[in-house]
Length: 222
Image 1 (cartoon, rainbow, N blue to C red):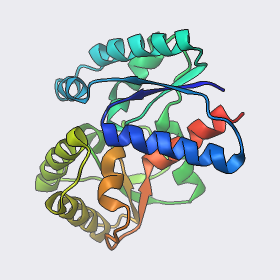
Image 2 (cartoon, rainbow, N blue to C red):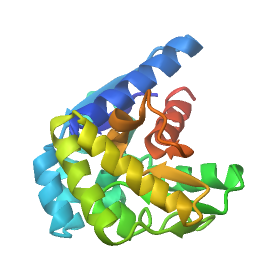
Image 3 (cartoon, one colour):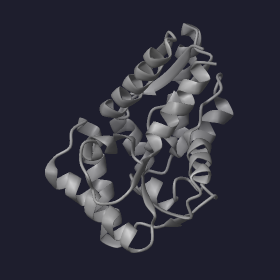
Image 4 (cartoon, rainbow, N blue to C red):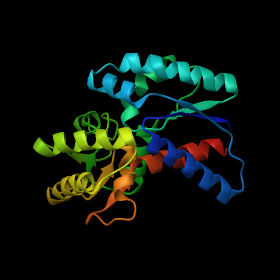
């Protein structure tokens, strides 16, 4: 199936999805048919901070229309943060939207987890991943950790690079979540792979974006 990806939010996240789909398709010997349309991560950040999901959905739907014209049969947002407007987008989209949130909840249920922590944007953390993971109890990120994780995540995602100070912010916040009972820390920001890949934070992690890539691959390979 021809898949459309809303990319650019941020650039490293797009690369994560694209490479993940390429790797899965190559391993299966299945051709990848994909169209990627670029969205502005700064514009999305403004709408996210301004709590304006309807405006962002209007921006995304124009990209989905372009994907449909190119032959795509379904579309996905390559950003956990970008899912803040997924309900609004699904209501007006000309293509089915491959929503990450139910896929994450199903993956948590399969693993029989009871308590998880989440790091990502402020909206992801405060909404406990948009209220869409009822299969588990969420240990909330609180206080200074909430502010520090959000600001460092946005800085990292905007440029597509991580520095050691940012990595330590994420690791320290995750350790505090596990100390409060989280069995695993969910990477609720797609670009967090930049900080975690190749490093041991001292706690178990689940990458929401990787779960989403698996689901997109399953659809595209069907």
